[in-house]
Amino acid sequence: MKILLIDADSTIPNLALMKLAQFYRDVSFSRLYIPYYQNRRKQVHYVDTTGYDKVFCSVVFNGNANFVKGDNITFGGTGYSLSIELPLEIENLDPNYSIYPENDTSYGFITRGCIRNCKFCCVPQKEGWIRQVSTIDRIVRHKKVKFLDNNILAFPDHLKILDELVSRKVKCQFNQGLDIRLVNNENSDLLSRMNYWGEYTFAFDDISYMEVIEKKMDILNWRKDWQFRFFVYTHPNMSIDNIVRRIRWLRKNRCLPYVMRDISCWKSKHRNFYTDLASWCNQPNLFKKMDFDAFLDKRHIKNKNRVETSYNLYFKNYRL
Image (tube, rainbow, N blue to C red; front, side, top):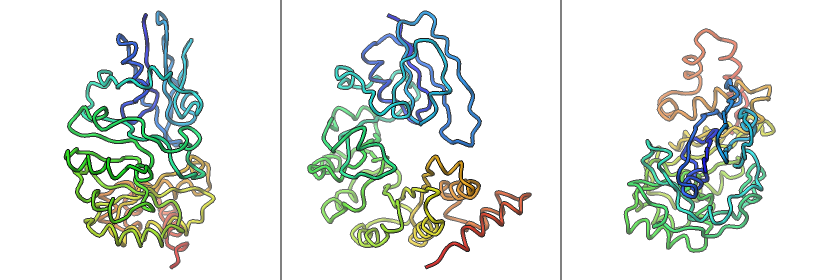
């Protein structure tokens, strides 16, 4: 049986495709690198599926399935449908990393699901309540690992998991972020002793979180400057003030932001501002060393109107 696997737009090795590769063994593989960003020009990829018995395409980001054309392609992935799942006999397999030969990192979920119900997040609908689905032993295959758990600190036995990571000195990160609202003295101590890779990532989804974040930062008092990164969810329905106050607080407290723009930002009248803000915040070296106005001057040397518009939205909408 001839099998073709298509990775439409994953930014990391795609677990579902690697499990399909493990199940079917002898597969062909194509990676299309379709971008998520709505302001990027996207080309339609015409896939020749002639001679293949089965063709599977995984789509992570909404809308990108429209840029993959071919006969008899079975689509799946969060960007295509929240209801399509791998058969259990395939889901329970270990991934076959050979389709990503340049990869040097393990990926996997110790837990699936979440206790939260954030309006912008599909995890509760897709994965349900938090539960354990794998172990550290099954996931770790390389010298470093990225755990994809959506809310590991919400899992009742998370202290045992963190303690095992500490004792085994596993070089790791939870790249979907940690829920700072669930930080306490016990898990803070374990987090501080982990062989952590990169920044510890949390979420700062709304300015209303500021009070609890400030309290939890006192517990996380072992941190170094710029060692924490916060996802900053951004939506056109939010006031500019809501967004800017979070970013200024993070910079004042020497934490890195990562501006996560809702897809509707690209259709907003302020789309250029959101792009400028993300371009500054999401490049740590620039964010650390220059203010937003200096960044704008450097980014738009020949476009003073763009500089003035973004500058005014950032500084005139901010209030303490």
